[in-house]
Image (cartoon, rainbow, N blue to C red):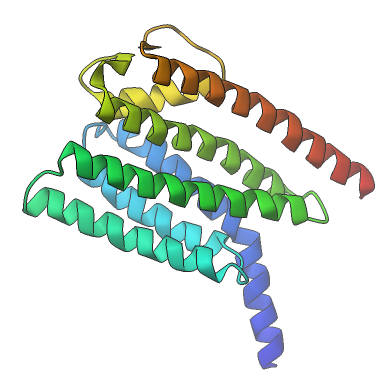
Length: 219
């Protein structure tokens, strides 16, 4: 009976981990704008914490190191934001360090997600949602790199004063190769990474679609 109960709980977790993770990603990206709170750092911080929690469900039971790293990132993120709000704003140097830590976290989480897609025996709706989540994560990873470049050299982009939101937007239009031209990279570092991000986005789409079609044909 206990074994059956544990098995049922594990199956429920597998059924909901990708939709939950995708919802958390979507909320983090779009909810503040939909609520008219695009400039609310507090709301973004709350949504980021919820995203960290959702990522714990995504990580497989065997990936204990990734799970512990995720918990550590959550604690560091909350601590940094509390310090920022109640003691003093973080300097650019500390922001760069914090962004590097978050960047490493997203790389680890992305690797975990892609590994699960590769190991999937059958293509289900959950696997497709996981693949879509991975594509969105590439855009967020690009944002953190662009943000680090901007903190190190603010003249790297022709951009407005609201750098965080604009760089997130720039990351996704670069990833999807839309390129409206309203924001443009100026320095070599920003231009080179824009090229890399565009190439990664196209490579991801090609490889993931090939994997999904291949596994679907084997069904």
